[in-house]
Image 1 (spheres, helix red, strand yellow):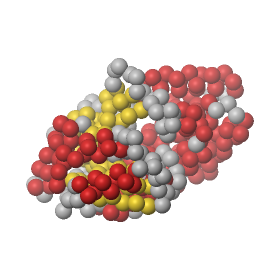
Image 2: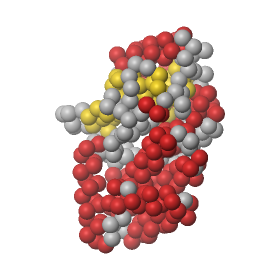
Image 3: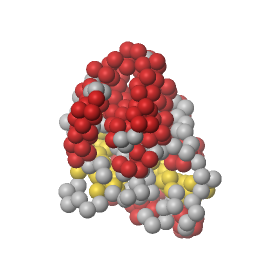
Image 4: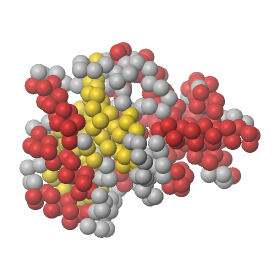
Length: 338
């Protein structure tokens, strides 16, 4: 059995996928690399098949009709044979030295009979044109060099959470929580991280800058104007976070608090983007989103409204919108969004 399965969702990725694949090859026979060609119309399929032929014991090329990023991740989970599972987007890559440490850590834990549910590492914003690379690290909130539980987790500051780039899940846990991401939907990485969390009891933090998150392409899904144009998909993911996990049933208080704060930041992003678009239609969608939250969980609605983010994005009138957008611009600089 492989130690780690690495899924690379690819859609028309011919210009950058090879860099991603090459960064994963040093894992050797400890890993399997699943290249999921999601109905590409360029040379993506050809490149995937080439790598499978060259590295048949490591790489598997999977071709499917276009289903979007979420369905590509679903396919990766269904086909994974590794004990652990990670998603690496085709325009990102993995740091070599950190990769070796991750595999050594997972290997030692497995040899000792210690199964963890989630391994967390750091990630780095590789922002186009930026001289200074921002690294998101967790050494101030997570214990190091030992297995720990949610009770040992410190307080995450606003805007610093465990994203898809940070986490490696135990593959069986993803099956146990019945994780299935929606098709033809962007921003499902939030669901990928969020839904399994109540099932996580054993965590391990490795303080290495593993994931290199490329940011800056004009067509990238987190480009502000692209996000506004796809706001309905952002709202869909936001609502699914409310529908698929009942926070009232999350038994560990630290886990529930972390998930609540994560839900708050995603709802904030949805709300501010709706405001930032400047259209009457999207302001109506903002009201509809908060009405949905209230109908879904009245207590949670008021908790989010009372929160720092909730208060900021719900200030009334034009002045409130100006303040909210100012906060948004500052937060973009802090977290490195383009």
